[in-house]
Image (cartoon, rainbow, N blue to C red; front, side):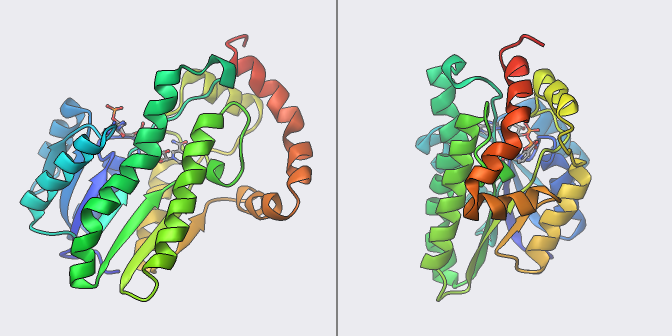
Length: 263
Ligand SMILES: NC(=O)c1ccc[n+]([C@@H]2O[C@H](COP(=O)([O-])OP(=O)(O)OC[C@H]3O[C@@H](n4cnc5c(N)ncnc54)[C@H](OP(=O)(O)O)[C@@H]3O)[C@@H](O)[C@H]2O)c1
């Protein structure tokens, strides 16, 4: 899809990856609605990116998503591209997860992309064109210890993307699923960053990930999995999950100490 002159809705626009992706979309001539919960960060970004439309909203409820969708449509007059980037994570032992945080994570990471897709899909169907980009994670294909809720939300998002892609296969509407490995952004807590160092976890720069997201849109990619060996592990996990159990066992033991706050 050519981005120039397209009406684009980007969620999580004021976040670590979002603000870089927003700038890149503007550079490429998109008419951009930038959605985020963080009003101050959004206002600062909108000042930098003239001509964009900031939409402050909370994606953790269906009502909030519908309100955001209405505002975006009012500002853009339609939609060609929805990028579901907003997300939250948690690095913790499952027994320590707070029930409210579990619910919030499933709402923001899984239900919000589904609610927004539902709000915009009829318009795309009317025009018989459009693209929905769902940003998942490698953890949506490999269940990672101490990221059980996050993994569950991203597994769900991958399943939704695959099913919806098959559902619209006979139309000109396209669904792209993006699965980055770890990225250096404020999403990751200090404990997670220290665990990443201790386990030699690969971490990409947000600028590089953004370029790959743009390339996936340019090249009409169905899905992309980032980095080696992570993308290979994704395939091995499908065919030989016990091998991945073994490969991750030592890392899981190190991660536990960080997740429990003992390191
Ligand atoms: N960073 C990584 O290691 C990594 C790896 C793989 C995949 N990903 C995925 O990439 C995406 C972007 O991540 P990132 O690293 O850029 O995260 P980030 O820096 O934390 O940015 C996320 C943005 O989403 C916003 N947001 C959170 N909850 C919201 C809600 N209820 N309503 C509206 N906006 C909300 C946040 O606002 P607040 O600041 O107000 O919370 C923040 O501006 C996420 O889907 C994430 O799962 C990230």
